[in-house]
Length: 187
Figure 1: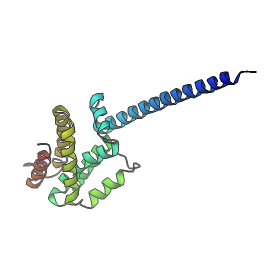
Figure 2: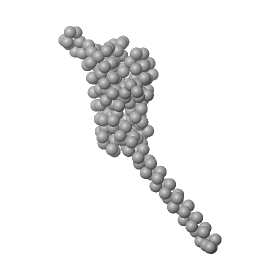
Figure 3: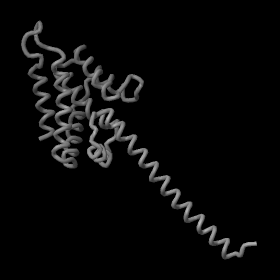
Figure 4: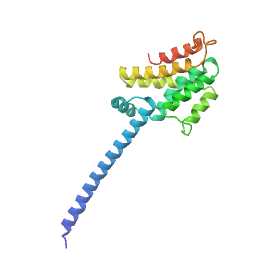
């Protein structure tokens, strides 16, 4: 029969190894979660740089907030002329799909709502505040990549409809104004 002191040593050793095993398991789980979040952010943003993705994770950017951040400028450009034209809607839906937002996704109804009912100015103001906050936390190269990506997509929406019988600029003065306003958020 083991002595009581030997039994306590075993219990103590078991407790120590159990605690260490739990910490290792938690670290592994966090690593898997971070990898999954990187993959989700990459699918939405197209960004593959792990340092940039890790920085986004540190900043609390979720796939949902990133998707919304990318959609708000598109929606406001589409509404610049007072209504969303079919061609603009098609471009936005295609860009949303390329960002991983599908009809069965929980974010899709929000997009559908924005395309049928014009969002209030407070949404654009919130988007600008969000961009301003990111600018303060990201380095200049990261901000520039984000600016380029968002403005490029917004320009695609602006160019989707407009012009007269294929002549003239497809981008209306009001759309140009919204694009300029979006760009100012990055200045």
